Length: 160
Length: 160
DNA sequence: GTTGAAACACCCTCAAT
DNA sequence: ATTGAGGGTGTTTCAAC
Image (cartoon, rainbow over all chains, first blue to last red; front, side, top):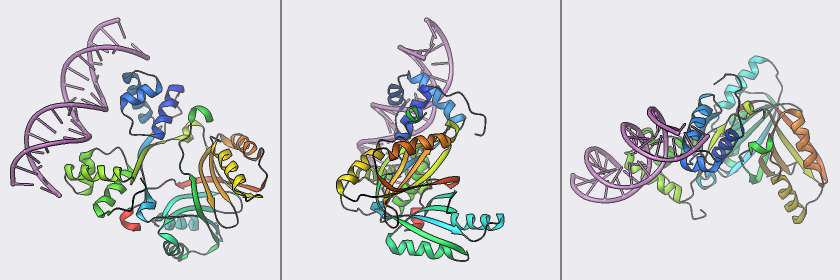
């Protein structure tokens, strides 16, 4: 998993790009999509797994249809900047099931949390839990009106 | 895809939660994980696909190992609020390959864009493209110092 | 890198309960 | 809902090029 960066050529990048878009591709379709024989493609795939370049695969669930219809980006500014406080806060946030993303960021704010809840009441539930026992300087929620792009696959051959 | 909400029981939620974490589970392992026979589990899975509850599956690629090592959350405040301008801006942003997420948000800002680039120079390339031909009131980047949680699977039985 | 073949595992269906 | 069994498909390995 943590070995050095290995040599990745453009065939590998094509494989990775394809699987990012659709991890359910069969070996046959994947090989055809990248322009390799099934055998060669399979060997590359094993290697990409073994060096940790492919970490796993996740189904994309329609959370909206389950009533999880509100996405909020929560910016947090803390009052404390000790290692201990930061560790405690991190554990606290990790325990909240509404949390999808959790980044420590630079600039004006300290943390960015993406949460998905059942409407505004679900968000308030989250908010109350978030501020319980933690002295936060500022908490601001930016409510998603519309997800235009969500978790788009990176075209690795283009961004390189 | 757009049909009415269907009845989803706790077995379905378990299936969805499992596949969110790991879409590569075999039918056998999935059935065992949710506590159903392979047959029953398979039929539910077909149904969940057919009603659009499962939209697809995506491999999780180690972008960092490919040199895509900088994540930035870009907040944008626009100067124009016409439908035409918004449509143009949307098309513009969708064409930028660095964009992973793109939300229209409420509150102080208009848009939140998550971008992944090769270091700061890659971000500057993105920034220059973003502001070309578009008159934006404010653009602020919040740079990720650390991704603590990234695209975590929702425990659907808990959040319900 | 390629093709082709064989062994195996898995998926899907069906029948019976 | 369950088990069990069969046929077909896909994956994985191997040999030869």
